[in-house]
Image 1 (cartoon, rainbow, N blue to C red):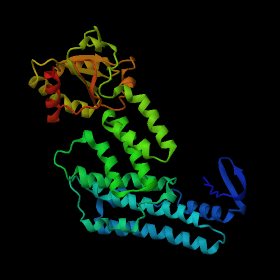
Image 2 (cartoon, rainbow, N blue to C red):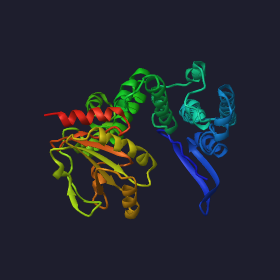
Image 3 (tube, helix red, strand yellow):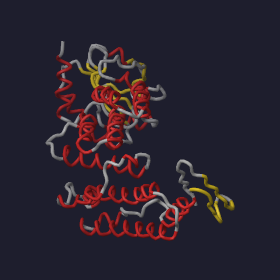
Length: 390
């Protein structure tokens, strides 16, 4: 059993206990702040995860929206009532403890309700939500901008989910053929619609961070510059600047990192030797389902762009070389096939997941640090435009 400790300025708390292996027995708390810690310990013993399980699979899948709301409300009430009873039996608790306990009860509740529409649809093999606008009335009971809870994980998890879910509903789902390349920069701006204070700084910082790590560095760089000017938390700016320093070499306009890799026929090929052509880099593997799903689209894309100065370069991250060679042969995959091996190219190109696509211009500079997939019609337009550019 883990015992969280709650300390406020000027507290002087003494803990006495018996250590039984890895377990703590006979815990006694004395001194200023003891009441808070006694209540916190009892609450966490009764609800060890900090909140009841609001979203078990069977409830999310089988209950309709009103039923699910009743289910989560009942769990929330149990926890709130238990806390109220503890306070009646213990004198000396402070308002700061109320904030912590209620944050650990209410924000997971609200986050689960936010999650329900899309999870219910997914579990029941539907593509659309099955709730009306009244469903989201629970947000009227939720303090969304809560500066005093910014260091409570349950709160920041809620803020993150709130922005993601509302952004998906109001922007992505409401926009025909939404351009996902703009997602992180758009989410940065969207956060300003609903948030302020600490919550806004947290959400906009996270949008920039994820945009640099999982999107196009060049598209969130202006947001980074804006954020640093207005941000009041030095630690946020430091994290973002450190990540930018690690990834700025992938920004559009930078010389693409050069590597010498072995081709499928055993020849050594350098990326710099392809200068003069547009290079569409495809990091993939034979065991990757989404990668294989895109291969037919890639073959078709290459056919449409035949005669253009474009090189389709497939960099395999496979460790099973026989499986790699077999799939390339059986699928008759055109283009230049290279093996990442132990070259370190994945780290340099920040390949944290596959498939991943990048585009290098004819000048050897990065044109797109996180390009669209071959199945996206806009990929054809982008490659053709770069190939025809003087």
